[in-house]
Image 1 (tube, rainbow, N blue to C red):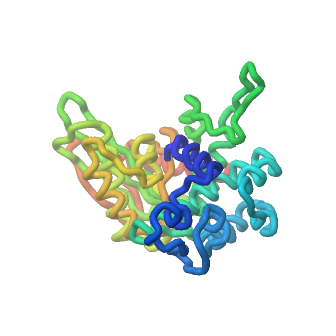
Image 2: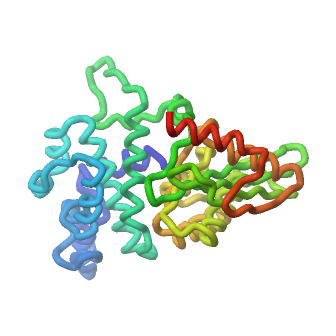
Image 3: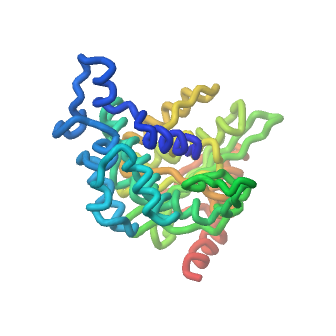
Length: 329
């Protein structure tokens, strides 16, 4: 997901310029200022990200994985409540609070303007993973004037190196599906690879698919994700994390951002399929952690297609064993 979007959200929250109903009512009197989600009171920025029932539900879920300030800390209101909250928190806590508010606003908009099916439960591991990745990035230094952002969200070129680690198993009771694609620019042929495993590294399914005509590497990567989503809907009956080593696919699908590229139709289809899997989310993973899916994609490039339930082809058995051993070590 785009870090720039979180920066913009933070600025709007700090300047009281989020499109909440109370603010819209001040401009257009016929708009009802009451919160469209809970209906208990007028919706100002503080209500939207703190007092609303959906905000409290997400905060309660995040308390199971994060140490957050006491509830009384959040309920202090006032014109500069957001800046005061950040200034009284540690740098690590500021990041957690900012991401939590940003995700709360996403759920609010999904209810008010979308289909309302976005899963609060899935947002907990999603945010936990995102913040853990952010912590691993190098810190920026102060500029010549001694100024620095309240929260350091600067993208780093080493992000792929940080993420390029061994395959990590999902949480207990969850599944992880890795997808990858191989594309030949000369022949326009692509291969798709999908592998699903549980917390013990046991293969739930594996698949490889040949695509005879594909216009770009990005299109191939989206098709691989679509294949993973399709197979998950058919065969996986537990919360699922999807991993891809394509940063563009992870950004668009992970943030539900609107895409206007030539692949918009494929992205829309992927968004729609994700709605059918409410307890799922998407991670960006490095190539090392995606080796099994990569080899299956190469198999698909060789004009082969197949799906195996409960095991994988022998050509990737060594890689799967290594992944399992790495999780133990």
